[in-house]
Length: 211
Image (cartoon, rainbow, N blue to C red):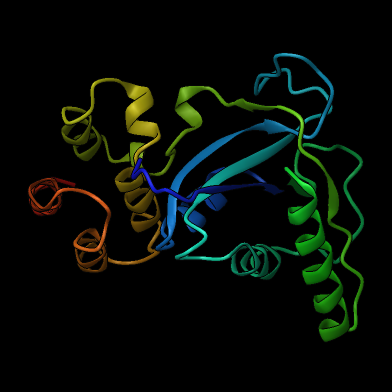
């Protein structure tokens, strides 16, 4: 993951977590994405034993490059929050705030969208407690379906956790879902807060990938 002086985190649920991870991972300004379970009380949840938790995406972002409000508007534009929650909590529309500032922004954007749409938004807004990372095969799910490219990429990381937490794999997980292009990713890399030789190496890696 690119290390920035300013970083913030947004955790949300909007259905199955595979597609939202890809959708948000392709955004310039997003530094890392992870999928997991949050919003409930069960300890040590797993995919098979989720309890009262919700499938969620954790997005770490640079607020100087993309604002919380921009992410929230995308969140509400990209799923249907205008219906009451399902009986089960696994796929509910959910926002979890880490501090009072996040809560205030979430509620303000929600209220404005309700006025604009002339409709109620049923997203649950609640305090963030614990985020439990989902099992490895759920992380970067769509990218991993391209086994040759994944094997090539993995050779450039010390372990699987580093692969999951990387900014470049977040972008590529979005790319394989047709969010963005390799050319746009290469252009963005040149602006990242990394040494020039590392940027050149990443750009070459993209050129050499076998899909």
